[in-house]
Image (tube, rainbow, N blue to C red; front, side, top):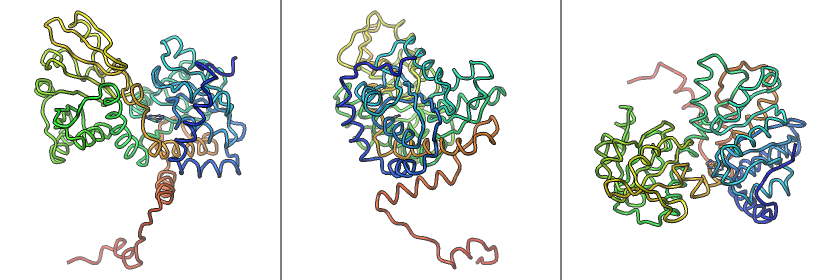
Length: 419
Ligand code: ADE
């Protein structure tokens, strides 16, 4: 098996500089790395990872290797690899990387297979493709796996379905469900990086624009709050009454998507579901409407329907395509409908990935120690890990917090005191 497959190893010095720059904002992961270097909790373990190959992921891979693991890495999306980072990981840090930006479907799955061929004992996934592929191998393969971890909402949804069907073969830790992951990465990370991708692809003014955000989950609320911060008029569409109410009381306009379709200038989705913007919406959109997806898979905008309604499609600039519709209107699609924040920008900033990847590193350590005793089900990140990540982040940020006084602790543990 080749040791790596990257676009061009000559890009590695740029990659090293990017990895070092992003590391400045990852103090929690670095404190874990320092401990791993001394105690080698992952000694001899093979870790297969299917993650976006960014500078932040590089810092995770280097941390795992510092803990004694050998890391095999492929991309979790065909457009999210930074080729200089991939080159640096392969050349300078001894990581077995199989990834380049612009992978075709065959490349993508060949790279996944290259990782699985190494027979990893821990599988780290972002979107569930690697662990799903492992589940399609024979039972003997899965028996050698101590456990897996899943980074994102979409992947956790897929694994819940696998679990419901009774087909899950080893324990999987839902890293996305850790509070120190989704409250920060999904909200502030997706919020900022989606706006970043939109601006890099279009360079349009957001002030005064009507931005329609599908859903009010953690990613969507991040996008909504950042768009509002840029002066946009933000409209939320929802299917969940509680979230819709929350969005309304957070001061957003809430309406049905067919109503929003008529008035929006920009449509953004990060729901994890398919066909969020579809033919019935495309029919109603204004000439010049812009569509973008920051969800994990490119299913949220119904591109085949858009193609059917259009006579031509052309590239205007990088990550921006124009669909000339049969009735003369034009609709613009960002980053081929693939996750805009990584394809048109650089993904979430390092400071939030610091906490997400600290959870990943500590979950890998947990699986090494406890994996054999766990059942083949989906597990949350242990609360002690989640709280430790928060504690380390606060300490690294120089933020001190109070502790309860003895009287307060007594008060909270008693039922006697009232009116
Ligand atoms: N997912 C979102 N942003 C990311 C980043 N910067 N690195 C790895 N995975 C990500």
